[in-house]
Image 1 (spheres, one colour):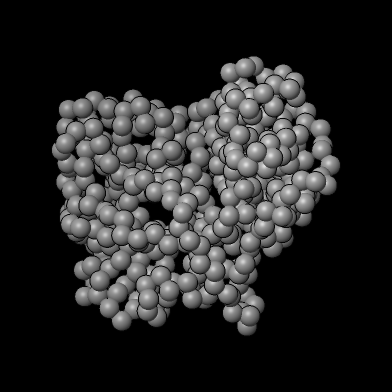
Image 2: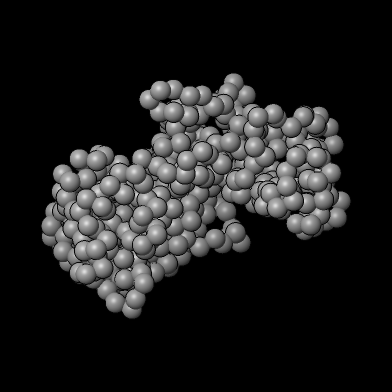
Length: 430
């Protein structure tokens, strides 16, 4: 299996053809036009890296990122373009009801960023987020106008100045209150970081358009939870002056799963044999499997590995790992076609499960996991001992089942086993 994406191959050609690395080492940056990029592959696909992991290999190897500075040009350099998202599992999840009168929006099946924002707005979550009534006023693509900003060098204690001349930016949702204007960038997936530019360019545009306080917000909707991260830019001219102010989590309705639900299921579950021809899972973040399944169920009935890397926070290798994990659970199947190569489609079982309400969907996913003997035994050990088993204990359980895996592979895969079991237990503690 090749770990090289189409973007990887195309950017290697461009780096060689335009001496990009040499120019960066000499001048600090390299400008390249969309026209030049289009000669190898469509610029829209070649420059869409919403998360660090999506960057082409040649960018990562040389600590590079890319920023647009106009409608048709980009700047490549050693820029600190991404902001890590804190993982705070202790934040209380607030439950909101959804208006029964609304028939055209289904809060139990949210498949797009626009739907997640609309559900959060119509349920009153966004009003609660800021303690005042706001109105949904802005969304879509727009021109940034002209401005300049400083961005930090990711490798040295220096910065670059980038001059923006009517680049394009997009706002997923803009909400106006009495004295605030809120800009929301949304992702319907669990992510580790985000591209600051997606908040910063709209922020700079709208601070020049309104006297109200402009508040940048990142929203991650994953596994039925709305996670909001409220930021501020301490210095309007400094891209890296972004600072997290507050984090809040919400859900619509009650999706609670009790520990008793899990123990009852465990007591009556029928163990199914290990699937043949499918690797044992190597996908440590189970909500990302759910996110991938939700997208295939609701948006894209067939996804290639290349599609997954472009649209979600996966590199080409992880795309295979997470899709294979869903195949292991019987929720996806793999097909090949001449145009896209390997593609992933949902099975009948997958459609049946993903069409359920949030609570019943999660219960069915738990069942899929603990039908496999290793996960079943690990969860039983967790419940018997009242605490998470250590990796050595999971390694022993896996070795007992004679999977044909080497000792080192078992040690790596045991991390996935524990992560999935912790996901199950986490559902009982919301």
